[in-house]
Amino acid sequence: MAPLVTVVSSPRARLFACFLRLGTQQTGSLQLHTGASCASKNHYEVLVLGGGSGGITMAARMKRKVGAENVAIVEPSERHFYQPIWTLVGAGAKQLSFSGRPTASVIPSGVEWIKARVVELNPDKNSVHTDNGKEIFYKYLIIALGIQLDYEKIKGLPEGFAHPKIGSNYSVKTVEKTWKALQDFKEGNAIFTFPNTPVKCAGAPQKIMYLSEAYFRKTGKRSKANIIFNTALGTIFGVKKYADALQEIIQERNLTVNYKQNLIEVRADKQEAVFENLDKPGETQVFSYEMLHVTPPMSSPDVLKTSPVADAAGWVDVDKETLQHKKYMNVFGIGDCTNLPTSKTAAAVAAQSGILDRTISLIMKNQIPKKKYDGYTSCPLVTGYNRVILAEFDYKAQPLETFPFDQSKERLSMYLMKADLMPFLYWNVMLRGYWGGPAFLRKLFHLGMS
Image (cartoon, rainbow, N blue to C red; front, side, top):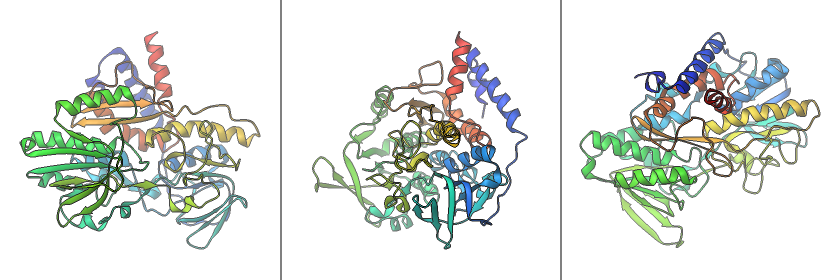
């Protein structure tokens, strides 16, 4: 596969390539090592809950601030995954092994790894309890517990995944089943769903639809496939500029989109999916399928739902500009578990990490946070095996684009960035606490244009 710099050869792109080479040189000598697998003490200056993208990134940043010995991460999982690549795994464009590494390999060197699950938060005592019976105290708490997948809220799941013809790109256990269902498709309905809840990476449910359509064309099955996107939403995308571009693709490729349709049951033995019409509660429709991709309902992790740090909906209640908790001044949130009114993506976490780093720095000095998060998030909308529309926007659902061209157009360069460049930046830059989103790149391009 050709590198990005050979595909996009404009002066601005070469400026971008120079930055990437510089970044590679700067991070090449950095090595991460395993933290201790169990806690040797019960008090830390900074305690991080969650070892996903937000947790690891903030632990790396806090290590430089207060010293590795004063930082701990509570995380039960043995493996860490770069989940944005699962869209391509489900379409057969990447291997699942490409997406995961041992958690021990991404814990910042010297930072304590408490291999346990959080079962209770007690912010009034500045402590948390874990499932191994320990109480851990902190001076500052960063909550990065991600989002919970609720497959069981759909009747017939998750047990339905034991049957063929059904998959889901949202779980390491089911993403390869999507690829198997795609390969085994013969004739009939290929159905893709979007639930009636907040989700992480809200573009992913339709990305696999576009990739499946491309695969059917490639394998000569397109004329036998009736491709249906049943979404609980009332629009294809929340930002008009990109929604307009997607609508053109939907029309050109003869895709069917049904709005306000929520998946409530899967009869996997009969290859049937039952949807409720949200505009007419109680009214249902049964669809037969030859292939079904399920995007599960999602919610805040159970441990947060009844916690003092949660809002009425169960999400960590933080200030949308500083990411500081609205009640507990030494508690902070980042990523999918928060109530930040923006799309839940890894790109959003990157942008949030830079803001949160500065917020905590000032709080530690008894100063008022000044840097404000604008809601930046990004969704690389994969529309084929070599094309991406790079959606970037803010709290106001207004485009906040990085590159000096129209990002609502399908581009090979943006696909290569999604498939190859972003995983590199994730493992080698973001998780090491050196990537705070593309704001710097935007400044770089603007300088190149002046």
